[in-house]
Image 1 (tube, helix red, strand yellow):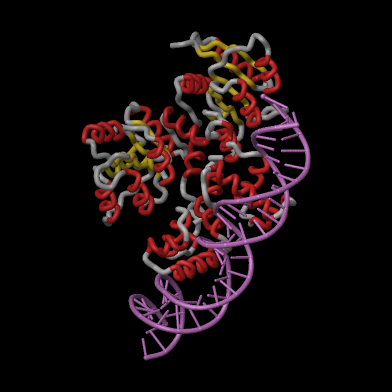
Image 2 (cartoon, each protein chain N blue to C red; image 1 turned 45 degrees about the horizontal axis):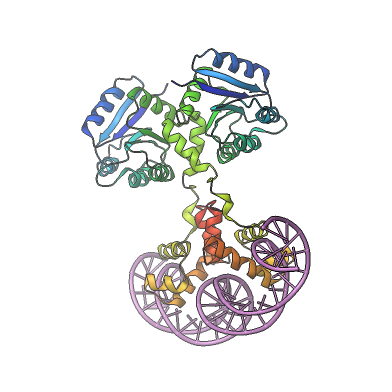
Length: 212
Length: 212
DNA sequence: TGCTGAACCACATTTTGATGTGGGTAGCAA
DNA sequence: TTGCTACCCACATCAAAATGTGGTTCAGCA
């Protein structure tokens, strides 16, 4: 296996050191950089001795620029580096933000070092490892929001909404559903009332958010 | 540990049997149901001897009703059962659809049985396991689509788009940005051209999809 | 049996939106 | 200076959407 160039960005000295020592001993891992802040990292990245990095372990709760913001900067310098986020708390929003920013793995700090090392290899091979509890949260984000009572629209009304989302005009909807333009208007009028909105866009936004 | 009630829905006899025999021998797993189709599953679910199920392994490529459609029906009968999807191919869309439908884990069929069993326990404990390559695809879906040069809209135009997404009318936008109604129209006209769309809704949909 | 609600339709009015033509002013680069 | 672009504005026209009032039919229910 190719030697993996690893970077660590972690401010907690204890964790940082244990990561360093543990990862370093593995013959296939080469620790090319280890710093305590994103700022320090970026400085190193500027230097003429710009280290190569395949995988980076990044603490999400850094002082100064936090991990999430850091991802953007890091990815500008190292667009091909895979980032593994290390986190203490598993807040939904942070997980989501980190993924959106471009992290490709998300691991709890409670995870044993061996697992973290596994994750490094997984990531280096183009995969991704998520801590189970985090993976679950991500999966849940995809799931339809199990709202109360679907929103009270009838079958027909749902068809109309769908047509609106598809970008059809009233005329086209009437045509598609074989009803008159006025009837389409009538339906939409009622839909607005039960949905408590007053424009097509609001309906479409709701529908796209799964709020319906 | 609590005994985990497991169900298997898999049409491939070889895989089905190997899953059955392997899972059954574990003292903490009880195989309460094993069928070859969703239809057969639903029938059993109707019967007076409705089996309890904590975790279900579901093949995504079943004949008849496929796994994705199946998830909906299964979740109606068993809303609290955690579903692990088993898949041969790793098509982005299927992964996404399955998650949206309510699967909480997604595993390649190439995964060794031991790992699958691990996944069962993980899931039963409220976690989720994804095959590395699949997890990566999911992570990538969150990432900002690395488009070429943002789509060509100017700063001002982006403000207008944002306002549209916020549901403002042209008049309100003009008001908010202190420009005339006609100017707003002018901007929108140009936005449509560079975005190659021809209605507000399309712009909003694009914006909401991150395509902009 | 008579009420209710969903779906259907018509007519009318006002507001928005989509598009075109034309014309200003800056700022920036060739 | 010229030319380009972003931004600004006006006027015009037609299409689409928002909203209200009023009416019909049919199925399900008290």
